[in-house]
Image 1 (cartoon, rainbow, N blue to C red):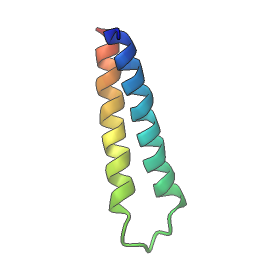
Image 2 (tube, one colour; image 1 turned 135 degrees about the vertical axis):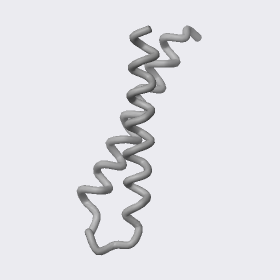
Image 3 (tube, rainbow, N blue to C red; image 1 turned 120 degrees about the vertical axis):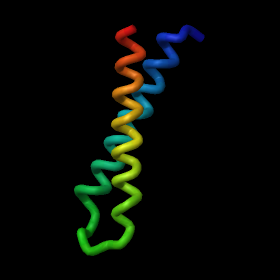
Length: 58
């Protein structure tokens, strides 16, 4: 498998994780105590997206 294909797959997966975290933040009840999980998913997905975009540009 080509390195560029792996980076594109990683970018797609990171976008899915980020969108799932943001959706969890938007759809969840604000009084709930488990808001840390969508925050972690959104932050990890965003870090992955940035890292993959930088790797793709190289």
